[in-house]
Each structure stands twice: as structure tokens, then as C-alpha cells.
Length: 256
Image 1 (cartoon, rainbow, N blue to C red):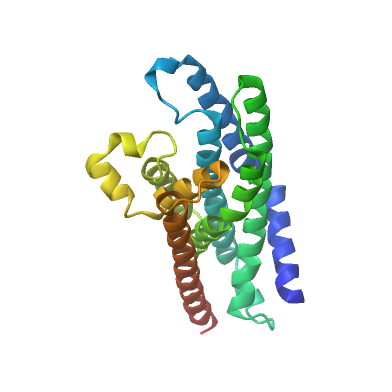
Image 2 (tube, rainbow, N blue to C red):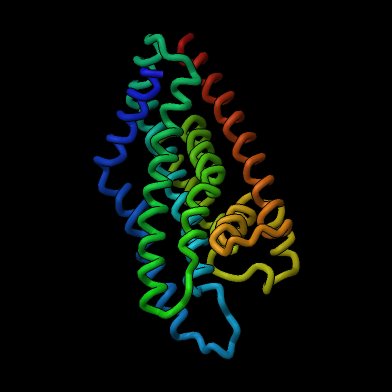
């Protein structure tokens, strides 16, 4: 446990020292929160569009921010592999599970901190714009999005294991774009319907956004909360196990 915590602390400090991590993991979601709120003020109320309203937008931004945690997980691991830092650590008593936890724990902590900052901003925006937002829902959401934070961090770990420092960010950027669209962060997938909604329902991003929004609204219905929660827990566990297996295989290969 001490080895895992020490390695986690090192990875957290490495990320904190990188200015880009602050820009993309904290500043960029806040900027998007403000921009989309401004867009919402320009939309006539008669249109009935609510996707950019702060109580809906906050849940989408929560998932959007986690995608950048995925990006920096992949970059951090790929960088450690290429610098031979990990190869040197393989000779230590640490096991593959220690490495896995050492990368995932600080990323989940980062996701929670990021979420807290975004939700504080969302609450302030709600006060300014006159929309109601449930404080209890915001706090509840911070707990319920932990499975999606684990899922995105594990995807980053998987990409960081499979790809080098140059390729991993590009792959993650593609997934961020796809996840933003199929997650319904910037538009209403139910309103779009058709083939796009059917494809989205086959992807975990859709359920991550749906769970975040339902948690803020304290909507515990089967369709909005229960099914997305089950899907997210299942995806988080599946991808984490897969990432651990791939990392363990690469670790054994590097030791030969």
C-alpha cells in the first residue's frame, strides 16, 4: 500500500507540474461552461431548447472534463514508458496491480477536483442567470460519476500502454470528439433520434452523460438513472480489467 501511495503521489505531482494539465483539465471545461451559457442566453425561450441550460450543461461538462483526464493518463504513462522510467521501476518490489493503482488513483482524485471546480462555477452561473440548480444533486453527482472517471482513466491507461507518446494523444483526441458527440454533451440526442441515437446507445459515453444529468436532477427512474449506472459500473470494471491485463502483458514483455 505504501508503494502504491508513493507512486500515486509522484504521478499526481507530475501532472500538477504540467501547465497543460491545468489548462485542459480545469480551465477548458470552465471556458466551455461559460461559452455555452452565453449561447443559451441567445436562444429564445419559445424554442424549448434546454441542452445548454446550466442544470443540463453541468452534467455534460462533468463528463467532458473526464475525457481530458483520460488524455493525460495516456500521456503520462506513454512518457514514463519511453523514458525507461517504468522499466527501471520494474526491478522494484512493485507488482502490476501497484502500477495500475498508482496511475488510476491520482487521475480519479484529479477528476473529483475538476468536478468540484466545475460545479462551483455552475452554481455561480445558476445564481447569475436565474436558473435553479440542485446543490444536493451536484454533491450526489460527484459520487455517481466516479465509475465514469474510472472508465476514462482506464481507457487512458490502455492507450498509454499500447501507443507511444506521439500517438496516444492523437488517439485520445479522436475519442474525445467522438465521445462528445455520442455522449450528447452539446446537443439533444433524444431530439435528434434516428441512427445517431441508436449508435450512441451502444457507446458508454451516452450513459455517462445521462447518469450525470439524472444525478443532478435527483431523477432515479430506471431509464435515466438505474440503467446508465449499471452500464457505467460494468464498463468501468471491464475496461479497468482489460487495461490491467494489457499493462501486465507489456510489463512482462519489457522484463524479458
